[in-house]
Image (cartoon, rainbow, N blue to C red; front, side):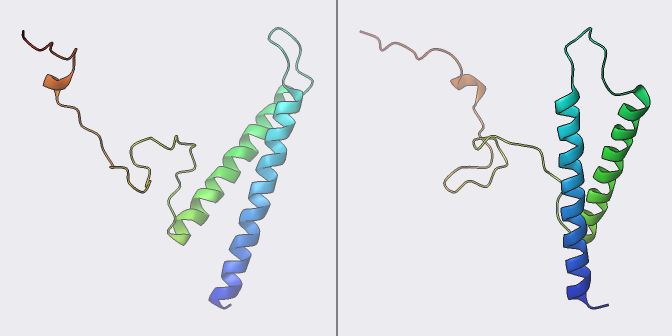
Length: 107
């Protein structure tokens, strides 16, 4: 099997996993009930969905590691440290003596 064929199989598998995850999370959203109401899905089905999502996440992690990609899919704010934003510094340090109210000029 060539590297190109392996890459296309990996891409296809990634797309399948992403689609499965989207469908399962949509089922969860559509069937979520208000507190105190009886859930339409059985406890066994809910646990099955949880296990499927865990398996999907584990396989996504394996594929990412095999491809050498980071597994940092958490949403982030644009101004968060660590974001590679042009013109922004990676870290912002504020000296402790600069914290507080500005001093009034003496008369």
